[in-house]
Length: 325
Image: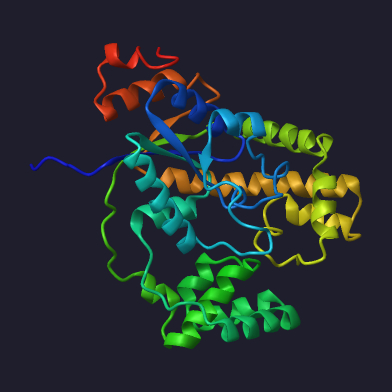
């Protein structure tokens, strides 16, 4: 068997509220890694409290690439993430360190490692017309239209996922072929050798408790004031990806007059639990990931041992690093 000479990269994955950031920072104290965020909400400036973005002190000590790189008025796609992430990984490697990608957006991890299909570039006129139809007819109606020409996409894409419905219809109009068919075409192999680590809580009740506590803490820290400031800008709409992020959508609707404070809290917690459920389901399909249950034990020692072996670092060398264990 030939030796694998690809550069090294580490994926640290997990559902929301599982402790990914804390573990990533601890590993950065011990190993020659630099952090890259893999989170569809953290890319947006101004989405701080509700996205559980690391605070300024944490980011000053542990800089993360791909945080605060977009204005909330600008949609950000998986294709854009792949390009940005590959550039960031190259920069990290050129600096002599190993990229550690940390986050919970499974679509981004999957697109980065498995590649994206050769799809047509966005057509502003087609996209604008489909968006107008979605606003007039409702995205459920456009989901039904999409499912009629692409049943596989109809099963995979949720009726409320306006961005992906719009893209699927756009691709079909531009090519005459279903997006699912195009996505099955062969892709280029990933040019990095990856160690996958996943925080995978087994006790759903404890995860739900953490989600509820964190959501309540966000409210106490001024989450609604943050969303009020976003609404006051006047250029943001409820159908933008940034505003449809979990928690933000519920806060936006509440501040627009839908429901009361208790209803907002309950809906926000429920939506976050549903997000965590989807993340856990995806992580269980990542059979090559080394998993750790953060509710059973501290994952740091085992994760450190995995990095030591992956990076080929003797224990004596690792102990010379800051915070070596």
